[in-house]
Image (cartoon, rainbow, N blue to C red):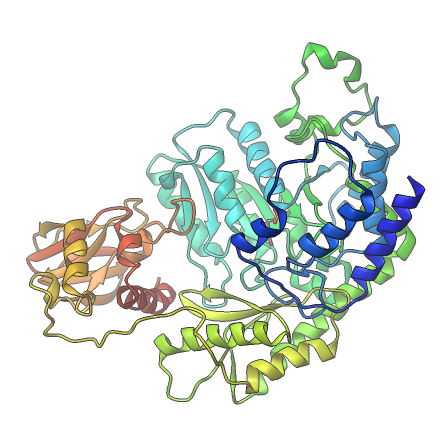
Length: 605
Ligand SMILES: *Cc1c(COP(=O)(O)O)cnc(C)c1O
């Protein structure tokens, strides 16, 4: 045991202290070549197996803890945290019931107590450490539904902003919310949810006889770090008796420093909060957390007491963590949080978080001051979204050229960034979080993005057809600018998806807040677009509408209708039913026009 343990520690220390690439990819064929094969029937020398691990497994992965890994959400753990995981595994700690786990349970209560304190939650709040933010979000949704509504019902509605994390969509899907029971609400230009938008959506649902249940707000959205106006959203929710959940998986621990606390104002008002200690609290994977303000609600949502666990039932004053979530058998994730904070001291964590925030501020300033770079949305927490300006490049060219630039950055070994879309616009995205990332790392990556030329293969090939009005595509599609660049066989596929519809002057084709998802192209006639009472546009032949609600935001959910469209003169429409827009967007020329429309139209809603 000792010899093998020492050998493993040596291997780790060697690995962890060499600089490698932030990412080493490999194809499935390459990996099969190295690793495929049946299990050995008998033992093998541990030394040989460890060598294979070092040679064939560990090199082929992202170094999420690399100082220049600025993609997605970096993961930089600590050595004490990793050792605590070893302790939890070696002792096979079971942290499900008080009876079997008084020590680890108390450690988890302590750690959760710290978190409550940092957020400004009352001591009566309760929580549990989970596998991650996804599990925490799902647990929050289940807790809210069980306590406010009980079993699933068709009239329940939840609200999320278009910046919400995909795990929120997955939670809703798994818990049985149908597409018309999840309202994806548009955010303002700064990517924050306007309380008035939420209020109007709730009122529309109440008028339609639905029951608003829950709002999932962003407290540091993964996309661009944005924080919704939490205190104002809490007011709206309180007035309507709705559960406000705050997803702070990425950003929540920024409350540990003054700067971050200012940005996360109002977090304490949420009924529940998701945190991810394996993100900005520097814990090794996996460690998420859910806190619920009214602590008893978590137990009432999850506790089930079978006969075969009767000895382990919690007595008065005891906490059984298995009663507070999905897992019965669960390890102690609290050990790593506790051990790393005890050994390193909380100030080290505070300072690392503050340093990341300052580096993100520095990065945003550099981007703003650079002639070559464009800041696409104000920095929020540690996330900076930008792109390179390429002289003369239009919107359509900016995307592949920036994608190539990011690919060139990766190939050069200088660093790694990822990309996203902000209301339809392509952006490169830096997430600065790692406690070993320094000024020189951020500057090296920005230097590259500012000055290097993308070379080699474009990261994504976007065929560009000239936009022609007289195309070879036969009518009716040929007259549509949206489809004019398609080849004849492509147009045939599109035509097969369309049906026809007519509308008389004054007839409402789509109604604001409605939940149907058809997408329309105008063949003939005019249509007037209203947001609330306000007339915002008149559309004519060749224009399209309904694309916002028709877009799949995730798990089949999407925006409700954000405008009302009324026929201004006799209208002839091509109708693409729910789901067809995704098919249309497989054609780059169509996708480009739809994305441009999203970017232009969303702010007007
Ligand atoms: C990362 C993240 C999640 C998902 O958490 P996992 O730990 O990856 O399961 C959810 N919400 C937000 C805002 C996140 O950043």
